Image (tube, rainbow over all chains, first blue to last red; front, side):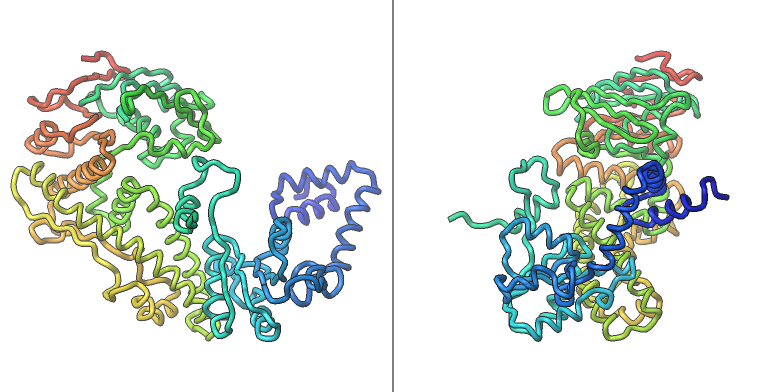
Length: 201
Length: 360
């Protein structure tokens, strides 16, 4: 039984399939678009179509790219010897904001998660092995998320993929947010920060 | 922390109730079904934010009300503390000294609790998971960081089992490599939990024996052995050995989730060989032993709640329990008067409406 006109139902269903949008939000967005000017709705649909047409994943690192190569891979100023492995393109944006990394990236497009049916074959891990074999890389920084799935993915890459190569493999440190108070840190983070403490000379 | 006064608003059957507690033994006496256990449950909410009877939050709010409030005044480190928990139908909020806590779960640990209820007979009668839970709860009470280790173990098991199921009984080379990594995670998480549990059982055994001997009034050898679900020295080895079987069955067959705490009486398995009375006494001994261990580690005894224990024990054992309660604050409910010789510091008799008629 459909309560609303068919096209509205279709739109609500489509919106509801997006991550982070439940049925109520989908309904709210659909009715917002229904009331909006036609030109605003057109702009949104054009943006979606244009993105799908023009943007895809970089052939080399699987970052989002307009064309075959992303802006980072085509930047020859960057250090081509240090490779940072991340789960998602949005992680690149986060690391880029720090300005502390001038190397290149490799995006896995996820993390190992058997519950969601994601194993090494569903990730860009084979492509990573090919890059490490073919490019002149001296250090790989494993920047997967500090949760169980991210840690397991990092362990898999380090022990099963990178072990035969002669290169430095590092893992992102975990610790406390800068500018925060110790008392607000959760026990697990604070415990990790204690384990990874540095000597003050 | 010790509780000096408890107030309830719209909690279960109570519209309003004020109940001063003694720092020693407070007894709540009244007929069955008038809400004595509800009072203990309210004290439990202050400690754990949930019902020790496993009831949903919604059912603790009086039917006509939007939310229930449990408020307690107490003493911690010689200072007065006021704890308030608001149980809403949608969410639970907490205040300490009229300051709202940013994260409600920060209240956990403020008030420690040991509960003994008739259901605890399951500790001996039910399957191994109940005894594993008993050990894990005790470990977390002694060291809260164990909670993270337990959750990690649970998550690793879920992921590993999902991987095993997907292999449909056969492991190709790529899947074997993936399983290696999950095995390493499970080995680390599993070893950590197993060692903690084994250590706890070793420390617990003499305390359980002593508690049992005291309650039973006779020396009966009590045994407690933590039985691993694998014979190998480390979990990593065990996972290598069990791999084929795990893949064939699609589940993790070894690990702390399959371990058992075997409790014996006179060398006989208590689960199958002990009498009902022996099992009740043993269950109480297990709770009291846990209580003593937490007391000695934290330097302060948890609040001890004894729900309707007297109906469970014969007169001699009931007297043995009440005349030698562990130090600290205790609240007991009973349908009948306490046995002679056991004089509570404060006694409330509840009438049929579930309200105290006399405080002595």
